[in-house]
Image (cartoon, rainbow, N blue to C red; front, side, top):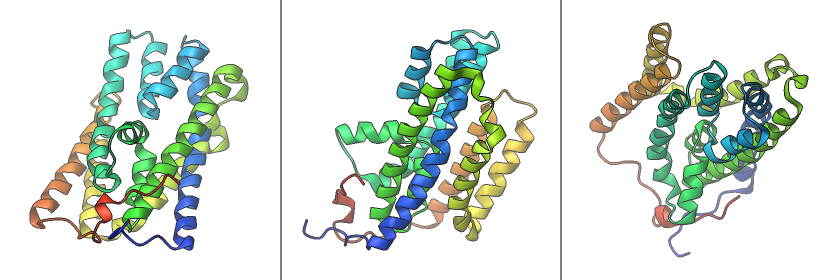
Length: 248
């Protein structure tokens, strides 16, 4: 397409794919814990699988089965899950800037907008690599999470807690490694410090999930303040915003 951004060098594509698959693999494996916990909370295999396929937001899914397992009502479970899901809408404000999708691809992007796909996407310096990182991570997590949800639901507690094997730490470590280089700027460091402070102060006082929302809002406040100081956004290559990279 005339005026589109130049293609990524092969080595950059391989680097982005390695990042995406490492995060996707670690996160997907942890889905076995959700499957086992969901069945233990009283949902059957099909209900458990439907949550992973349709809701597809780890924190929100754990909130649903956690509330139900503790004897809470369906209304309470949905309310808690919705609070945690607010962050995905905030992520979409960021990812929409580099995805530039419409129609069915826009619906697919909305379903795949999660912590991991957003982190890998925004961590990339070039717009084409942002798109590859987002799509490949989202697809890898979706496939792995749903497969391991089914395994966990079928086998149940016989597998034990995946935290025993360090799977939860592996996903968090990969996520933090992607974001670490971005903390070199003053604004990014200030955002991280403020978000951590808000989470630590509010966690003992508020219901689960609410501190996460407040931390996201604190980070958003820093971002809006930064945007007010700098008019416009980084200039994209001619036609780059209109280009459509194929799915990786």
